[in-house]
Image 1 (cartoon, rainbow, N blue to C red):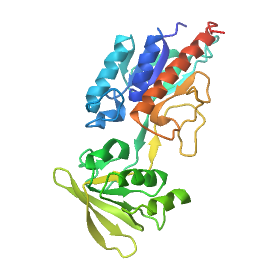
Image 2: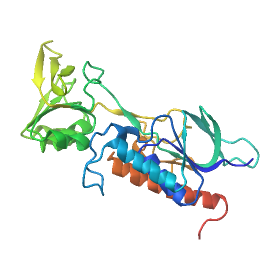
Image 3: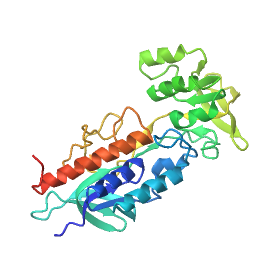
Image 4: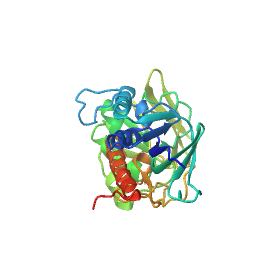
Length: 316
């Protein structure tokens, strides 16, 4: 059986696009599968101002297009299709070949790079979707600087909510943390440091009932779960940190951490030989576009080495 591609990359966010460039530059037949437009969550960024090499902000769509065009210039191909699943070939002599199933057919390859990302969990409250990108955000590092010296609301009580609240406290006039439990679920030391920040206030046993605004967020209706009383809290931004879920549907059984993210080594190799992971689907202490791009480059380089070894062409 002739193998269709050397590398198939599942997902075209920052990690997938970087992997595509590095895979193609290594003169490997590289295919990227993406059901939406290339860019992933970067497409939601109105003004990207913290990516190295761009002193002037660029919107996420334009940035993603540049990455796509760059990858195509090196020879990477893109297929608009839904990812269904991936498995090893059962054909004799082809046991190390992957079969990637998509809505447009099955593609065989020697290595797979998983760059499917993750999805932020949402509150599901009125106003959240309406004001997404206009005051509602799921990334403090990305969007916090747009609300300097303004009042901000953070929803959540885990490590991420506390970490991001401390980051935002350096930018905001004040930060109100709304958490449905009677204490943070974050690590005790982190929770204590957060509560010690002068301009951070925690509202426990409370939920955001509605996010309000006109053209942009003006505040949120916060309900006390003990008294049942609701109070409007003015703010120009609402940051939601109630967790995220990695997109691992259709993948074989791979090692994951407690939250379901794929575990890799420093070469981005998963627990299955020939399968690599990069970006937000991978267990990582810091999820940023620049980090995802770096991981994508490493994954492609490691995949190239794996393929060389598979063909008996490894460098010793």
